[in-house]
Image (cartoon, rainbow, N blue to C red):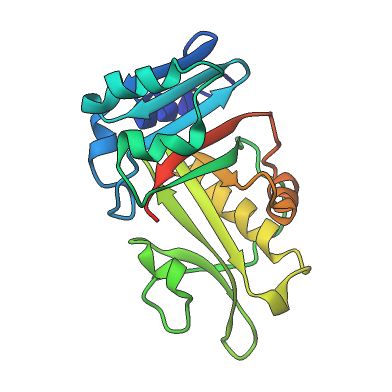
Length: 220
């Protein structure tokens, strides 16, 4: 563990951190309460090396531990049914964080998420988002901050297709990461393992791939 803020974030977000080798199912009341966007996340896990902490609602701990003991290893696609019922999705992500964002120049401006011309995904945030517009004021790229707790803030970035390849996303991520650190939290960045473009953005912005992973059950 390289930063106390990350330790505190994972302990708060999951309900326990760190843990020894193997899969550890822990109960957390946070899994039964709305997350940063007002929606539930009934299962969240982080894997670091040989250790995985899987956080679920307290009343589902026994059922999930039984699921985890199945021969041949727990079948991840079945986890949503164990913790939430039908209609939920399971996602696997690369889990990255940074305490030293790349020294890229600032490129965006902080603006209310209700500002005109922003895409719908940025409007779910309840605090200012970081946005790049063209000379005519049209949206090109943006970053929103998912404030999971006082210690860990996850960055989400998006760029319109016509503006890709200009380095906007990496500059926005680095700029937003500096703000998160200034606020006393650690910035995290999660992306699909198959999303090579997002992986390049993260690496260029100063979020190395340390081999950590995250998976969880999310609304459809």
